[in-house]
Structures are given as structure tokens and as C-alpha cells.
Length: 528
Image (cartoon, rainbow, N blue to C red):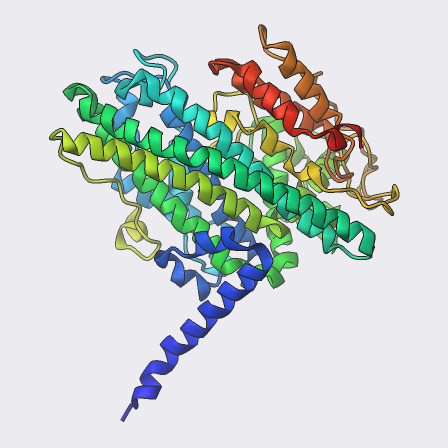
């Protein structure tokens, strides 16, 4: 006969594991990660066999979904009769095909980890585009004032996320090997200053959020019937996407400490994806790469990489040396991203929380005026019979980063892009020779079959016409920031700064935002 204690052993072990993870995550990152982990729908992730490669994918899928939701709400022109409104939320057969395709990818096929629904949302929402409409965005169909208020709060949220990311970077710098006691005190001082800044920003944004949610509910309640009928189902699907992204974000936080030991093997898994992405960006076609066997060595976050087994058909006109150099740069960035993943998880949680509250306020206003809530699109689980019988979706085209329209939250994130650059430099830091293969700086690995040419630098970044002078001043200061760590490649970093600053062009007062961003770059950072 099975005793009570025997029956309880499994749940007790699970409870102990959960408590241990809560403790570990609190020690590692504080309350931010715990907030993502607190979602009761993510307990399965503790025993899920996801390696670090999948954990990072889950966090990235959550972040990508949050950005797509923001873009659709604030940067996609719309009309009540626009056809794209009916495509927000995949059809059941399409969703099943997406899950089947993702399950067949090497890192999932090998690990048998669960495919989170956010992977599907991130892919399908990214396919939605519009260039015209009677309103500049979805929020404006409900009320022309909502988009401006949303943008103002997003700017504050971006500042908070930036400061929180700086705190995590300072913590990592403080805990680095051979850091002197004097430097640790400097890092602690900076951390305390950043915490005060976060507290002050949160005090500023909280009343703005409450006022906005009340205004959103009131505006939705007063919206015309045709607007409610057109926008309501879209909001329902976006709300489901946010919920699924929150699950992915929490699952990444839960599994992260258990997956750390798999980092070296995970790097081997992501290198082929990185290489294929680069080739596709440069040649327009994704290589098959049969027989590709990269040699990867990790020394902390330093990466040494040799690309073996690539054929001329795989490379096209791309130089193997240039490919190796760029692959090393991206691989190292992936490793750093993986090591500091919990900070990204916390930032994504904050973005999703704001989107959730916004969507809830709008939907409550619609239902209060008599609108009947529709059913949301659902993404089947990997073991669903629909997935087994589905036709796998075709690969989505990989696109290099571009200046395409982004939502206000991403456009306001120019400061966040500079977050890795804010660590207090060690007084004992000395320039060291690296082998990270940054384009235009480091030579390619000696094992590469041919000499690498320097990766061609992008054209000098420029501001969009009509942007205020203070935006140029901020962009220049951010690009020339002397506190940028040596592993950050300045050329793409600076291009990203200008891209995000140009994204402010549609703001009511871009000069005010740029002035605030410039002010945020303290004199210490600007002259260090």
C-alpha cells in the first residue's frame, strides 16, 4: 500500500526545488527575476530539459513578442476596415504548423524541451505590416490622445529598464575576478545611486500609469461601435500574446540557474544558426551547411571559433575570413547575453506588465459599453494531435536589422541600448589584446583557411532631417562614450544609437526626449 508520505514525496521534492530556486534567483538578481518566476503557469519549466540555448530562446521570444505588441499598438497605421486587423492571431492550422516547424529545429529535437507559445506569436506578429490607414496606429482609432500618453509612459519605462540593466552590469563588474576592494566600493556607490534613480522614476511613472489606464478605459467605453468591433478582437489576441510571452519570460527565469552548466554545449548549438543568419543576410539565401563542424572554445565570455566544413555553395560570394570574424563577434555577444539573461528577463517583465494593464483597461472599457468579448487565438502544445498532423510551416525569412518602424517603447529605448556601457571602470583596468574577432579590430583566428578581410564598416550614421540639435549631441555623446567595454563593437553600436534616435522623429517633442537622455549621461560617464 502506498503511504501518505510516499504519495507526497514528489510534490514535496518539487516544493523544495521551487524554494531553492526562489532563493538562488533572489541572491542572483533580486526581485525582478522573482516577479517573472512568480507566474504559477511556469512551474513546469523546473523539470523541463531545456538547455541554455532554449532558455535564451524563450527569453528572446518573450522580448520579441512584447516589442511586436508595442509596434502594433503604436506604430502600425490602421483603419476600422483594414484587412490586417483580422490577421492578428494565427489560424489553428497555421499555429500548429509553426509549432511543428519549431519542434523540428535541432536544439528542440535534441533536447525535447517544450516549445513555448511566444515563439509562434513573435514570428506571426512580425509578419503584420501596414503603410496606410485613417489613424496612425491602433490606439488612435480608440482615441487620438492615447498614443501620446502611452509614449510618455514608455519613455519613463525605458529609463527605468535602462537603470535596472546598469545595476546588473555594475553587480557583474563588482563580482569579476581580481577586482580591488577600492573598485568594489566604487561599484557599490554607483549601484546605490542607480537604485535611487530607479526609485525616483518609479515614483514619477506610477501616477502617470494610473491616470493613463483610467483614460484608456474611459476612451474605450466612449468609442464608436464600429471601432469597438474592429479593434476589440485584435486587443483580445494581443492580450493572449502578452500572457503567453509572460509564461515564456517566467519559464526562462525558472530554468536559468539549472541550465547554466549547459552553456558550452549550447554555444555549439547556436553557432550554426548564427553562421546561417550571416550568410542569408549577405547572400539572400540560407545555406544548407551539410558537414559543418565548428570548433568552439570558451574562456569566460571570450570566444575562439574555427569554421570547418563549409562549401563554396554555402558561402556564395562571402569571404570565409569575414564570415569567421563576424561569427565570432555575434557568438560572443550571445554568450554575454546568456550570462546576463536575468536582467533582460526582468526588463521584459516590466514591458509586458504595462502592455497587459493597457490592454485590460481598453477591453474593460469596450465590454462596459456592451461589446461582447471574442475568443482569443490559441497556440497548441507540442504534444497536441493538431501539431502531429499539421504541415510544418515554411521558414520565416531572416532579415538583418533595419530602420523599419518600431513601437514607441522600442523607439524610446536609446538609453537602454547604451546600458552595457555604464559600468564603473576599474582603476586597475589595462588595455588587453583580445581574440574576440570584432569586425575591423581583431584578426581572424589563425585556424581559418584564408586570411580575413576587414568587415566593411557601415556608412557613417546620420540623423533624420529636421531632428533637433540636442539629438545630434546625444547621439554623438553615446557613440563616443569612453566607458564602453572593449567587447562592444562601436560601429554597429553607434548605428543602433542613431537608428533609435531617429525613431523619435514621430514623437511630439523629440528634443525633450533627447535632452533627457543626454542629461542621463552623467558628467562622469561623458568625460570618463
